[in-house]
Length: 188
Length: 91
Image 1: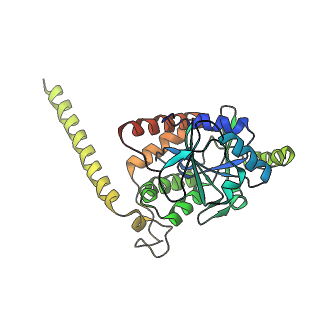
Image 2: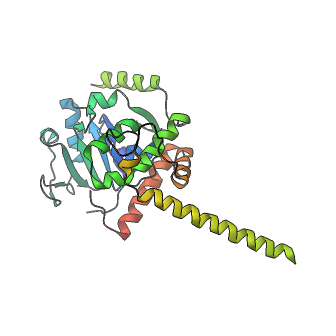
C-alpha cells in the first residue's frame, strides 16, 4: 500500500472514469486560498446511480482498503459497491493514491444539489474542478466542530475575507459552471 | 565605517520587529477560533467586530491565490507528503 498522497492522481482517476463530483473539505479550502494542509481528499459525488457506479469502479482495485464504520482501521476492500456510499455519512477509503472520503451530505449545508448551487469552477491543466464555495466549506467545518477543523478555521476565514475583496483570477466564470452542468446532463 | 554599524543595527531592528510580530500573532492564535469568528452565532466574538488580520495568514493566502490552480494542488500534495513523513495524519 502506497502511503503517499497523490492528489493529482486522484483527480485524474476520477476524470478518467467520468465521475461528477464536488471537492469539499481541506482540498477545497486550499484551492480557494486557505493556508491549511490535509492528507486526504473529500468529495461529494452526484448521487445518480450511474455516477455512483462510476465512482465505485474508480475506487475499486487490488490495493483498495475501507475504514470500518466505528474504527480507524482500514481493511482490504477490493470491490467497492455503489450502495456503500449511501449507507454512511462518510465512506473512507485508501487506495493507490492515498486517502479519500466520500460524503453524500455536507454538514450544515445539505446534499449535492445544495452544495453545487454555490460551487466554484476551476481548471487544473486539463482537468475541470468543481469546488464547494469557501462559505459552504466553513459552514461544514463549523457544523462538524471537530478539533482538527477548528485549527483550520483561521485560515478559512482569512481566505473568505480575502476573496470578498479580491476575486480569484484563476476561478472560471459562473457561465462556465452552468455550461458544465449542461455537459453533465448530456453525458448521462 | 559607520555604515556597516548602521546596517547591522537596522538588521537587528528588523529581526526584533519580526519577533514581536510573531509574538503578537501567537497571542491572537492562542485564542479559540470560535471567539474570533464573525460567523458563529452566540460566539464570544461580536458579529460587529471583523476577524483580526493575521499578517502571516494573509501573506500565505495571497501567495496561494497568486499561483495557478495546478500549482496550488501540487504544493498541497507535497506538503501533505512532507508532514506525513514527520508525523502521522489522523483522518
